[in-house]
Length: 198
Ligand SMILES: N[C@@H](CCC(=O)N[C@@H](CS)C(=O)NCC(=O)O)C(=O)O
Image: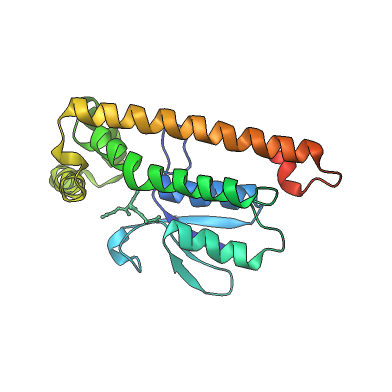
């Protein structure tokens, strides 16, 4: 069985990691049986989650590489029914979300007081004796990641504006891709499997 190395979920989400959540939602949508394992990403092949061990033992790290691995094994592409134009736009939106919006969320979770209050209960799984040492270390390292990437250097107002702008644009573009896919599904005499998901 596929083993997905991830972070546990919260607030009804599959995982606290959006990248791990992406992989888990994909495995569910593909109906591929899997089990999850939670651990310190320091021991991961790329020191980040997600990573998977496929049923044959193949190890793949990075959410996009994982999806590409399973897509290669599948007979029907997940984005079947989308033309090249829609695929290119979907790829650009994915990159915008993963390379930019992610860091707005990182800031919101780890740098704001409200975000930090929401994150604190996540540490309840850490043994009490070391919890109070671990918590500020993790928070500091998340701040450093945001600062190194650049988003963490902006003012809170600039970061919110960036987040709102990306969210609105990506939602509008996704709706356009979805409606053009829906049109080609409606016109198709033999709609691909993808059409059932639209
Ligand atoms: N490009 C990677 C990004 C993975 C990533 O940033 N994972 C975060 C969790 S959302 C992580 O493991 N962070 C731990 C760390 O940086 O120490 C992917 O798509 O899988």
